Amino acid sequence: MNEVQPEETQPGGEAGQEAKTWGMVIHLSLLAGYLIPMAGLIAPIVIYVVKKDTLPEIQPHAYAVFNWIISALIYGIAGLILLVVGIGVLVLIAVAVLSLVFPIIGAIKASDGDVWPYPLSIKVFK
Image (tube, rainbow, N blue to C red):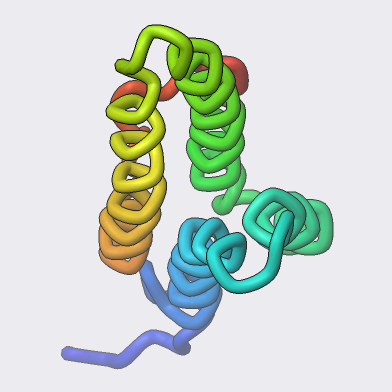
C-alpha cells in the first residue's frame, strides 16, 4: 500500500535536489568576486550557460543573480559619482554589505527550493 516510488519520479527527487544545489551555487558564486577579481561576475554566467539545458529550473535563480549584478554595478557607479558630495562612501558601503548578504540569503532560499528575488534589484531579466 505504501509503495516507494523510484527516486526520479518522486517530487523533489535527485533531479530536484540537483536543481536546488545548482541554484544555491549560482547565488554563492557571487561571493567568488571577494576572492578573485571579476569571478563574481563571470562564475554565475558560466554556471548558467553550462547548466541551463540540463536544469531549466535554475533560470529564475540565475535571473535574480544577473539582476543583482547589474543593479550593484549601477549602484556602485552612482556611489562613485556621489563621492564628490561625500555620501558616495555610504552608498558604496551599503552596496558592499548587500552584495555579501543577498547571495547568502538567496542561497539559503534556493536550498529550500524557493527563488528569492533580491530586494533593490532592477528587473532587467524576468
